[in-house]
Length: 250
Image (cartoon, rainbow, N blue to C red; front, side, top):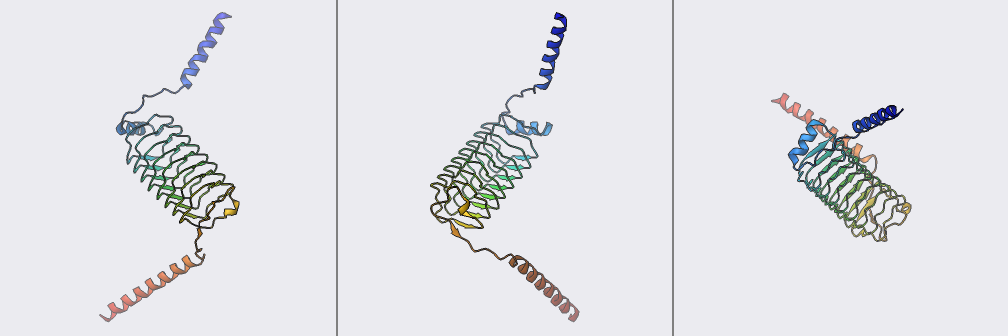
């Protein structure tokens, strides 16, 4: 009986050892991170805090719970990556391009993201408190259930996304443009909207609307883009006909 118990214990220990992933040492440079990516596009939980990764490309990378706190990610490209629950606090992401990325429940406190471009990004449940998003473009990006308290959105363009149930108390939205964004149950207590403009936003749905509502922008009629396209097409055809006539005369 004792031998059987010992065998079972050994089997359990061996199984646990097989299931436990080997902890790799912290990379110390961009080159080491690139080597990891070349071998396996998986940076799950990897500690890259404080590294200079400026201009690096993270395309199709699995990196949930990765630690990038304090890293230099200026001009970096994130595309089709999973960075959910990652720590990007105090990072420099100025000029970065983030497309089709999950940053759900990620921490971006005090991240410097001036001039960054975010397209189709999930920031649901993320923490952007006191981050700098000056002149940032957020296209089709969701901050649903997230926080951006005291965050700087000066001159930012927020288009076609969701701020549903988000906390933007004390946020700076000076000169920001907000178009076709869902603000249901969002909290804008103390937010500064001086010079901000909006279109297609139902501020009455907010939990706490800004004290000064952004200036309403005129809506472009739905038929106008099609009409402009048709006019341009006609002008091109007329130009081609005129050119052919000139050639025939010559």
